[in-house]
Length: 420
Image 1 (tube, helix red, strand yellow):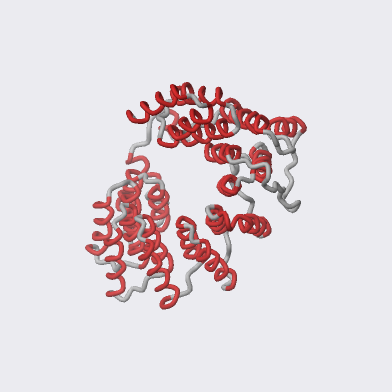
Image 2 (cartoon, helix red, strand yellow; image 1 turned 90 degrees about the horizontal axis):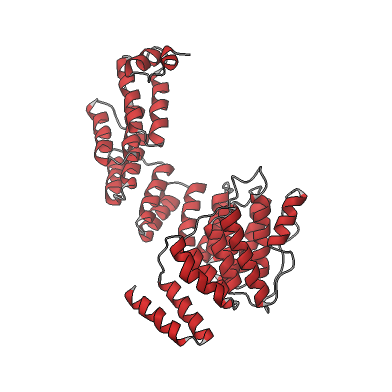
């Protein structure tokens, strides 16, 4: 134990220098700078740089590139760019890594044109960009919604430069998912498979999301979920939330419940609780499933191929009490289950609440005839959680007044809506 620790005092820069300088090589200093850069610890990264100089070592291209990352992560683009210029002023030739970090620095601030200027500068100096650089350019375009330019970079890489890697494909699949372009996403997936590229959970989650927003691709969600598990990837909370959302859009409460039960089992398993977390998105999607329930819809369970979770009897009893295996058929049963689930989320899981969740809960109560409970949400819960009503809230409130033929309340809602 160092004397400073015994005295309860912080280490000074001099004591740290004395300890590190003789011991660390240039490569090790660069690792220290990079580690701090990744988490935006600019002061610590610069302190390591100063110690490097004090140790009589000469910084190299990697040193300045890592400092570029540090300042960009710390929110200082001007100093980040100056680190690249300092590299050149020191007589060093920038490497692909140097250019890549500068591109990513501009990317942090959505300076896409500047990022492409660096890309063109690389080519003029006959330093040919590698796949990570192209991936950075694609991501920078997608961040500002310039899908056309992102596709241009991807196609240029695909047909002129090199075969895109699995990261490139996964980025573009995610872009397709956001725009609902399922066919494009599936074509890219098939190309990945035919090129023997490694599939990842990110790839599958993006594909499942793309299918979830299109009711005509509902069955494909579950085929992909099976493929995901077949490739050894366990669904995470994002996967579950997306699939439950698809069920809600398809008005398939039975399957939504089955997926949620599976998710709940895994979230209560101590070994998986960090991977699976029930959040406000989960509960919102379940509430929309309750709101859209149609008894005539065929409710089927997942295949038996899904892994089983081993839980103690207490947890099994809790799950069955919360979401029984038998699908509710009457509106009052559906409403009761929605109320139980919301209470469990708030009281047992201590979950966070937003306006979207309360709107979904409101819809579930109104659609299933729990009008008094719905008014309690409107009059009490929004205020309790410090949340503002939005357009969806007023729409649900007016719908409730119409269903109950409550004209005076409808006028009050209308007046509040006009003030909003």
